[in-house]
Amino acid sequence: MRGSIACSGPEYVRYGGNTSCLEVRAGPHVLVFDAGTGIRGLGRKLAENGGAEIDLFFTHTHIDHVVGLPFFQPLYQPQSRIRVWAGHLKPHRTLKESLAGLMSEPFFPVPLEIFSAKPDYHDFIAGETLEPRPGLKVRTCPLNHPNEATGYRIDWGGKSICYVTDCEHTPGKLDGAILDLIRGADLFIYDCTYTEEEFPRFAGWGHSTWQEGARLADAAGARQLVIFHHDPAHDDEIMDGIAAAAQAQRPGTVVAREGLVLTP
Image 1: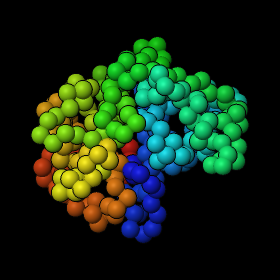
Image 2: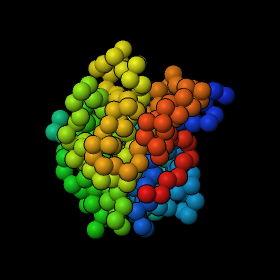
Image 3: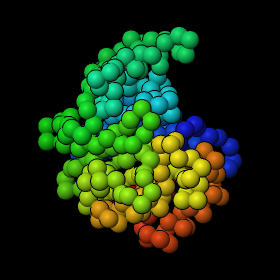
């Protein structure tokens, strides 16, 4: 849930320092969103039973969202069945090509082919509705981010989770695509990298604020806002202040912490 770069040290103990990775359980189905440094610990747990069936979705392929992929243990288990998805690369390149570039010299010592699980790679165009498993629908939408990104909505068993990170808002104008995606959602996980006071200094960097997240949630009737993608400059003390301010403005708002489990 940390943005841009992983952080360590005593000032990051309460909220954690790993970059973006989210696990969603939809009945028997395991969905993972993004492969930041947080995916290493998740992979160790998923690999305990000797293999797993997983759909891994990328919002985009900036380094903080993919850097953990080579350390995702199920990829090294031949019995694992893994599908990998991205909606921001077509038609100019493919997800497999992009990840192969990450895992190639001089950046990484072993190539993509080291994955004995032999994952399947799926490129789509943000805005499509996916069905990774029979009866499991995943809606998507394009996000305003440098090199593009994808937002996701998962509906299962009458509950809904929206994962919308790495997107920049236009001040004074709510994003219609995001509003449509998150309407009536139970959980709305949003890019809250900056505060409203910080945002003008970082215009064009591709991120948003917790205040904009609250406005979107209110307008769309989303039940609970989850503050996500914390700025690496925001230590525990700053995050405590953001949590208190967000709770005062929109009661029930949650600040993402490492290992946090939420049930919609």
